[in-house]
Length: 389
Ligand code: NIG
Ligand code: FE
Image (cartoon, rainbow, N blue to C red; front, side):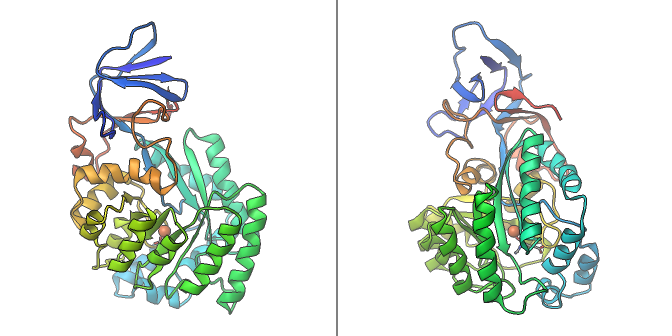
């Protein structure tokens, strides 16, 4: 067993918020406390640093071909994200580049390194830039390959209902096909959860419902890109299917908040996208707090609305843009992000949970939210072992 000591462990466990020792039995935490456990252990000195649970990024589109730097330039000239999408750019241009790419694994692996260097121990990666069976499969297989080769846990999400590909004219016909592929890819063990983009430029609530019906029949948990650019009551629809999360939710209504509270659907806020597309409407943070909806944060890393490779920067954006507290930001990338992925075995430092934690060169956890462009990460312990980078 490994004993980690000489650190300030910030556990996020309300019953035991701070500790000086953590004992790991393999990949599992055996003890967290202020008293040194009796016995002979393999001891590791963490040099007085601050330790938090490993960060969890619960919403990313990390795998894609190409980039959209030229669309960024168009947007700087005043063309909106929606206008670019309607003109056949946006997600569709990344679909073209993704279908053509022969280096999906390599480009994603290069990006993933930034997450590992910021103490991330679990992340989610979506498909959704293939939009045909072959390339959706390739994306999900690439996620599984990354998980095999890197010391990080990665969950896959099937997001074929992301945009209408250029080779279809009818959204309903396309949804029929994505539902068939969902069954195939689920049989291949490639899907951990199912997502859709419910929006004018994406799919209607009725089409989203058809995606969720198929997912439910396959016992797959659902989540939704909901109420991002307009209010289609997507979050309430997601909650009616006991969704793990409703994500973005800038335009979330009071009824949506109530439905999420009742279903315990987590609100995944993506301030990087808010910032990057210069959205001025912000999620109803106070209503979410008042109704006890758990708030998670994620990078939403993608080539269009959030080409941001830093969970720490997102924590700062949540504070500056949304007025979330540093404590809420840290919970958003740990315990509440675990809830957004349906994972109850991580997100806090507590006996019985996974021994995933990050070591930081800061005196207080509020510094993680405070700095911009500084990475105080020292080391990561993944499944009880110090992770090599
Ligand atoms: O989460 N909103 C839809 N999907 C992504 C953006 C995808 C893209 O622009 O490529 C998002 O913001
Ligand atoms: Fe997204």
